[in-house]
Image (cartoon, rainbow, N blue to C red; front, top):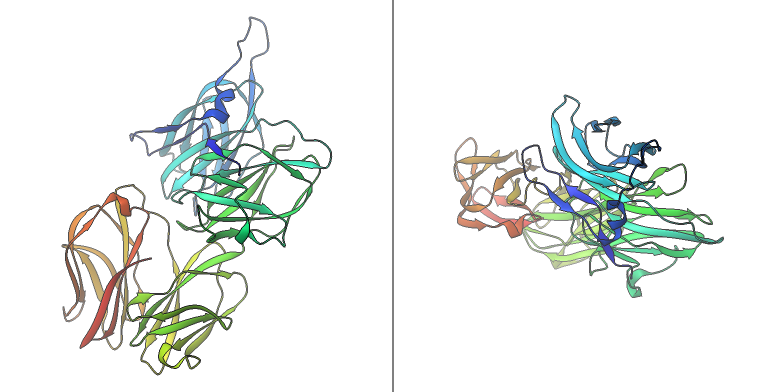
Length: 440
């Protein structure tokens, strides 16, 4: 397995906040800049830019010497641009000119590098990857892996031939956010890339076949697809053209929230995915290939094989979905929600929403103490809100009658829950409500 080292990068906070540098062994060569003798040509480095911030509006990336990119949206990229080597301040600003991030990076003489804009929302940052690599022999390729998916825990990556089963394989690469691995050599061939949560075989990314030609030098970059779990990828060429090509993922993640008044089983295209899901609980998460309709069915667990509801759903690859199953033990409906499943914007903040599945109920609101977090009509999911860690009373009430749907006093939330999204799932009927706080 290829071990990883830190990028010469930094989590860049909003202007005025502290900056955390990520500098490591594999990039030490970047820190050495040449001297310029009087009358000699100034030392030159090369930098390209890639925006890995999901749903990012166009940003400007600049250094004092020149503008590197302007209006660069999510997955936007540039070719290599010549810069003077040395310690250079990089600045990321919004279209309106607001400074979103700023930090110094050291560019080595005659060494190419890639600057990746990272972050969530407008809390942006950046990573700088040293791109220096020598070409392999004929018939061989050199490939490394880099992790720039903000809010996503460490990843394992498997670069295999398409028919290989990763169940019995060790990872080709492993990396945490902000790290890249050393280059590994392979035969020029056709491969697929799969990524899993580190230490598991839980696939969070799968590519189409990738043709790797003789003497290619590549970085496979993981970045956000709008989730704190699923990711997507790009192929960064280290050839003279510096081309960056996106490698869209094929899979989405789906969970079923059970608001049926009896335990259910879940099937996708007639294949069992989760069984005996209790009322006011979630199924296990499972992957669904995106792009084409998939048939999701729920059965009553007590009479397996007897459908309560079925529907055709299309899933966007790289995203997270909740299917709300709502009804009685004899019939039900299915409703699809696209989840805004990014991590919270800070390490001491928690995200939560309300799912109102009370049959025959009214619109409801979720409060944290006296603060309104989320509202939802019957059969709907409210928007996520963030709050700082602490101890709070959680309540759900009807917006019209003020009827109490749910109460959880003095719940303690800690920074260890930062990467967990919560839903308050309220089910049943107005006279017989069952609810729970569910980790999504």
